[in-house]
Length: 580
Image 1 (cartoon, rainbow, N blue to C red):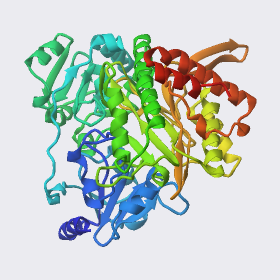
Image 2: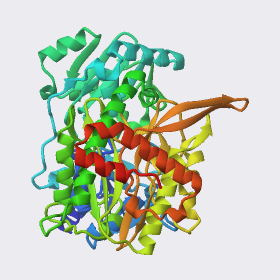
Image 3: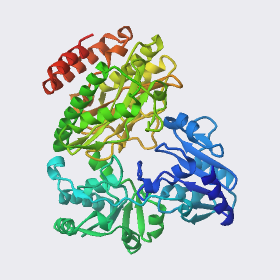
Image 4: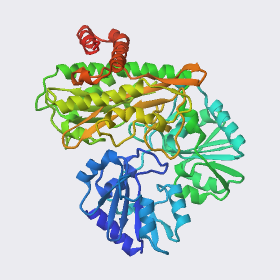
């Protein structure tokens, strides 16, 4: 509580009505480093998504359905939870419109505040925007990461920097842009084939990029590169400059600048004086369609990951739990299997290892100070993934550790039906994630049940585990057509508060199917290869087609993985993937 009070004292001192604290860095990243966790410091809420709004006498935290239970547990009494997309809960925009009066001062840190949000607000209201950094009240703030970057070898992705820049410049010419500003880290890393270690679990480097007709500039912190890297990029037509010089350089631009105002910070926007063409970064679309080299490599990465998780599943099913077994120790055990695989670097996100009622917290994160002991009963949900040099993985399995109730077995199977429906969907080209989301929810809807998160998200190639622009969800302001070459997750779930959580997840590669008089049809190829725990399945709830789908998937799992396992593991996998 004292952290909020300290900020409120500064607001009163500076006559600021409200101060916005997003969960963002200078690049509007989904996941941010410790240096940028001011919202977490103030609110004590540890979820990865949320916006804190602090007034002189009140404070509010907006977050989505993945974090409702977690936020209720973590927020101090002087912060009110605002449950996004729930009845009678205004958006933060609408809240400010109704609470701010003409001439009121709205404070924020311009280097982490989203440009589009403030532009829209300023157009609607006659208020004063105050760009002021309040992090000086943050005691013992960590320093900003400045790890060494490295060039991502073409053998893993197949396309040289020069070719990517040429593709981008063709797009710029088509829209009449003479320059293009990029602040989103995954776009920059994809375009320049550069990777780093500045954000845990995401191999990105803090950077900005400015691409013009005749030159390309990459802005890095000085510690991130050396003379050899500078020489290497110069040979590819790329100049490296200091990270903070971007603000000065964009102020000198002339002509038309292509920029995604929803993906840059407000300070950058305020530095620009030339004409702007506001549009999504074209690199979003370039990188979401994986090429043949990327598909070949990520297929191999998923086989290795399948071996690791299947070996872990064998261990889990044969391990007699003791008081020493916790959510943290079990997550570490899973990590130990991945570490044995070639080209493995790190997890692709913080592992969610949630036992029994903790599984109902959608993005639960156990720590050594706060975790449950795990016993041979109930269900254990583990959502995890790996960053391999040849691909990024993301898988969720719900493991049965003992006897289940009728409700638990029914719900496990209903989520499985959702999972199978999407994985085996055949659909005409032109469909978006909104069009196909219904297929994955229908089995739960029949029972008056649902889940408060998207069904699927795009996945990067040795990049962010969450990648746009495609997604599979019931709502999307600008839905993207699902295209061949896209990799998207399939992860329906069900969460019963204070009881259990169930989620099944595979990554799916969209591929061309048959072409008929009605056009080109598409389907999905599962990349993830790990058994579904048959101990949780109520076979009577599966249709004959769904049984066939599950049997076919399990046959593929066994045929692909068995040669990588020892004799005992192989015999167990044969039984774990038996036809039902």
